[in-house]
Amino acid sequence: MRKRTEEAWKKCPKSGKTENQVKVGYNWSWSQLCKCKECDIYYTIDPKRHAYSEETRELAIKMYYGGVSGRGVGKILGMNKSNVANWIKKSAKNDVEKCKTLCASETLELDELYWFLERKPRTETRENIYIMTMVSREPRQIAGHVVSVDKSSRTIQQMVDAAPEARKYCTDGYSGYLGVLFPGKHIFNVHNKSDTFTVESVNADLRHYIPTLARRSRCFPRKLENLQSILTVFVRAYNRFGAQKSRYLSLHPGAAVPFSLFDFF
Image (cartoon, rainbow, N blue to C red; front, side, top):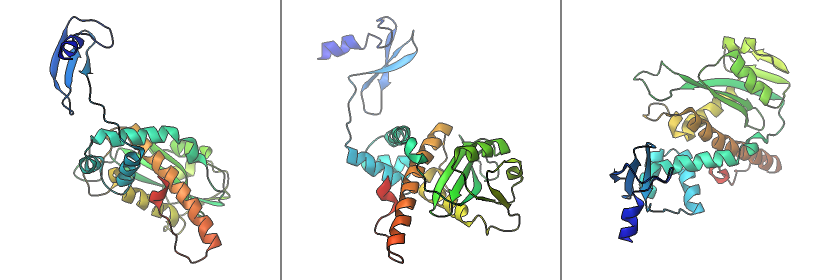
């Protein structure tokens, strides 16, 4: 076994070459890490396989959306923090179509929230990414969302065009909404938030459930696609929860809902 391992590290898995192969230490699981100088790639000899059950994966995702950071989930469950991010990305790819299943609504509210990418300054006044959300008033669901480096009218228009049509569209006083062509009546409220109270509440839920969007924290996304995957998984669960909650309350008015958001991840 030892002889086979000693010979294996001399062969690049990409090119198959045996020249210019060097050992460069160990990875996080203490497996031998090697480098091919010609291909400039790193590879592991006899990597240790860690097979996690489906229950562990679901628990890790629920813990993350319960407010525990990816690093915290890794420490609690005894795994690498990258596992949580990879499982969220995989779940997002598998459930893109499910996010488009929405209940019909007559009123849609639009709003935006800001955050930071790659770095977070000391003062929260230098945002460099925006999350635009469009929320149905009843049932409460996220009809559309866009993650972008700007909040221009063109970006908002793309979100509106991809979402189901409604009779009314309610926004705050941001001037970018004036350049958007809405399929229905546009209510542009510059005085207060009486027409956008639902989307404001949903944006507060985003900051509450997603650790990387929490205020007064050190968390921030390092890649735009990572944040998009996190939002995709959350929107899927949030919309399924909103539809089920609305259906249950229509059959049992005033009753306590016997399930929670975490049952839909």
